[in-house]
Length: 160
Image (cartoon, rainbow, N blue to C red; front, side, top):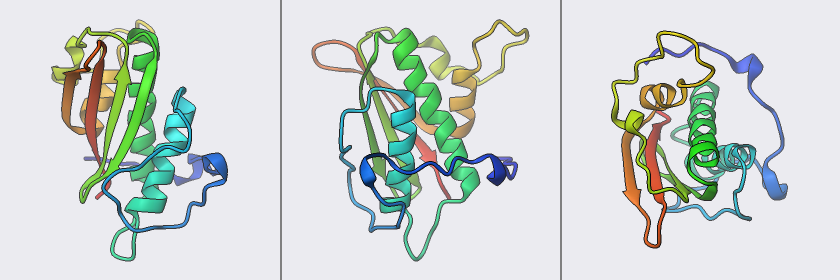
């Protein structure tokens, strides 16, 4: 996967809820300090999980990997808000390869583009770039119905 060094444009914003960016041991699941209701909150939370729980003495996510993660989180959260009736939940689980994201929304509709080839639109229509970005940067994409309605979109974002 090609990555351009874009360290200069990376956000240096503080983590949410007074958390620290310092590394902590990997855990099996991360619990958000408050409900995640926006793409900005989801990005900050995903970054904090990587820096506090995934990074350790043997491995550290690069700034390029964190930028890729932010792009995937942004697209998944925006899709939940725009097409899924709202962001109903957001989870980040550290794995050996990276982090698994689970985005819950309120729609039962499975996006057809989620299992497409990841081709970019041939003409600019103002949208249509989200799923190609997700497909190119994430792995193990799954869409599962949620009990009581809605769906969960989960992906693995590699950090190594």
